[in-house]
Image 1 (cartoon, helix red, strand yellow):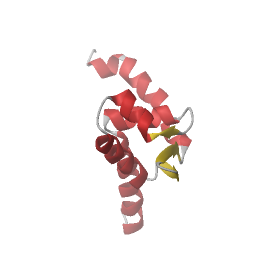
Image 2 (cartoon, rainbow, N blue to C red):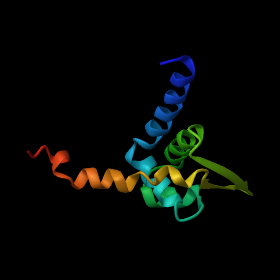
Image 3 (cartoon, one colour):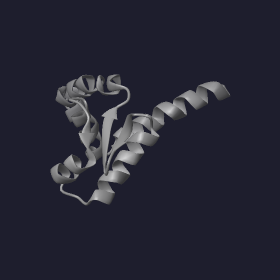
Image 4 (cartoon, one colour):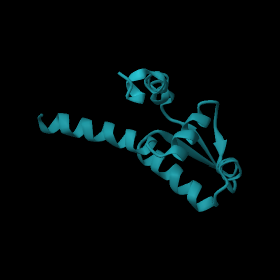
Length: 103
């Protein structure tokens, strides 16, 4: 693998790593339906504002979401909605016999 390939695979891994936390994955899936205010996530997840902000910062750093400040509120939206398209494939794996370790 050459240096260019390594850089590409590192970037891909960073996106997957950002989505690998259940709360961040849930947030990203919620954003599939449209933008949301940070305060909406705080209420829905049941954690403090700083925890939600940290999760959203990880998603933003990976290039998955973008934000827009409006007054005192910050709204997030998916920057690349296609990133979640592979979830149906993952759900198929979860439901398959291979996943449960069955022969």
